[in-house]
Image (cartoon, rainbow over all chains, first blue to last red):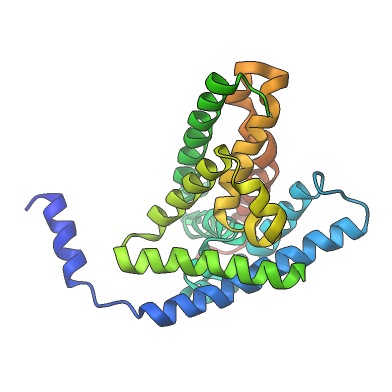
Length: 147
Length: 116
């Protein structure tokens, strides 16, 4: 059987997904995580960060919270019912980096932790950078680099 | 008000991603990669900046916001650095988050016991 044909057959035989329930939980979990992000951002701005300088520390704190919840085994449980609500926010990016790093520890610090750490984050960063490059190139050619 | 907007808009983006994933039976990785690319493209057309101003963390915390940061970082460096910014600009805006994840990942891996 061709791999493509096999994948199509697997997709057909998959049990139907509870679409409405998944969507509702994604909304609630994703909304709460973004709300936490807004609290962190507003808190930082209250202590003197501005609209521009607040971005990096907000990311770092949210990534830390995602990493902590992953290390404690909480994040995977949230992701089980939250789906994209847990995966799409930056805490999910953190989870996608930290979880395989922990899981493949027994394969060693280089080929385990080091190599698997980019298992999911790698494609996201690679295609994100590629898209940004193309978008930037088009703007550069058309507008000559004006912001 | 900004808290309510962050909850509603962030939740809506996640709901949309979940819906697309379930309906098209795509994998989570495909949805994540697609989200970043869509965010980057929207940012290229100048659409994401006003969206982020409106929804705050609701727009910047989900992954399309990562694509937006990649592009806006690059665009900001273009006038200063010219074509070199095509290669160096995107990481300037997103480096902190990526580096934080890597550092915490390695620490968590070393600090916890291997799971069987």
